[in-house]
Image (cartoon, rainbow, N blue to C red; front, side, top):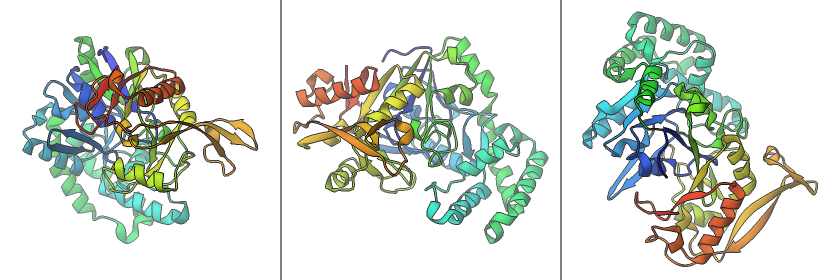
Length: 419
């Protein structure tokens, strides 16, 4: 993948596609890695040599020395979580002065997390399966114009007043779970003093880089099918995860984006509740979970597993305007005699679109392709893969309608087969 002025890498399924390792692989070719949405409910895992690193908010290019690491205005960020992550990175020898936070990013507070948990408890059987980290309530405050931005943090009294107002508004919901006002204010001001050196004018930062001819890689969080507007609502995250979210989350225009790369796993996974038409409730699903280590980076929850969903993939390709794709975890399928691809949905024997994904009478059609037994881990070019694996990749290219630039064949940074 030859870098353009501004490229976007995002997930094209229900998250956990391996975006972090893809961003890490290409990050050395860019000057800025910019996270454009979400919060620390999205974990990215990197494996470099004997080092395994789990990131929640700092962009995934952190193990490359070249790029600046920018947390954009479309994110919501816990001060405590960010400080913990920065300290962890500092202890590993990372120059954390490269990490910058937009003044327009919003702060996630302990009362957001408490509200998140109370909301889930109140929903009972209709719980959405959130991570309970306060992301949704923080975005709610943003939309209600009562949120607190990183730019606000240098105004101590104004920040304290906003905290008091927000706590008072949530008292009926939180009850005994309400954090003490004086504790929240004191902790916030203490943490803000440590964070403020990283806070920048986000619009000036990103446009200044572009105007100086710098290359920017915009990194998405979660996945397309979790987008608050175009995912499987209401079982979605609270932000825009699609390519258009990069414009809103970074403050750039669509004409400034040159290419959109979708990351897709060779099979599908989903965490928590919500529609999942290709889900497997059998030994194959269990096998994918164990071989693929399908357990949440942030929550540790086991992921639901299923065949590659071509209907969902076509939908994701459309709403993102994909230029190309990267396929991950192809090696997990090694050893299967036959591999399924969900190629169509039907309702009452009639063709259905992705909009029907949550309907109770939905039926799926599965196309079967040959599997392979060869070890893929040494392949560094797609032509080095066995014929059956190449045929599977060709099937997925046809589904997505775009070329697949690269395929991961193992967890290591360099375990990538290029076209």
